[in-house]
Image (cartoon, rainbow, N blue to C red; front, side, top):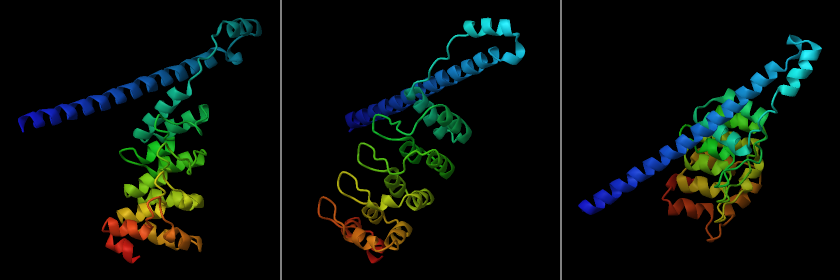
Length: 232
């Protein structure tokens, strides 16, 4: 028993160390990004023609170094840090300066996936990303759109925002063939289930649609012992 306790404790400490290393890496990349942005602002001020004569202006422009380009990876890390801090203004600045529509992390997550899986998901941040054309239907490496996470974690307001703004989400399936209705039924999200079943005649097919294991959403609800979902 003592050996197992020591092993569990070591594993926990190792996980915490890994999480700290990831946070340090994010901070470092964000600092690099901020430094580059500050440098570009300073260079822009130095090259301001209103403060120099024409002759001196030409000399100054030739002397100003070319702005350092920010990589998509650096911008992605900086954007993730803004999401963690719920800094919508900083996030918008990054989205204005760097195209992030196709940006993904190693797990295939877009900024929207990252936002809905953060510690405190924000509808304001999600709406901002949606307004900046970060795809609602994009799938990560697990074949899941961001709405799967919001349903699993009970963030109903965000789930409704995504479902109402992109009707194709109802037909999204993960690698196991599970639909949003499967997901909602399995975790007992009654409001989401009711909404999905009220949507056009296609919802009838959705209720009957089986995953790769041959299970319908009703079966998923029964398997998870979600009696209210089954009744719906």
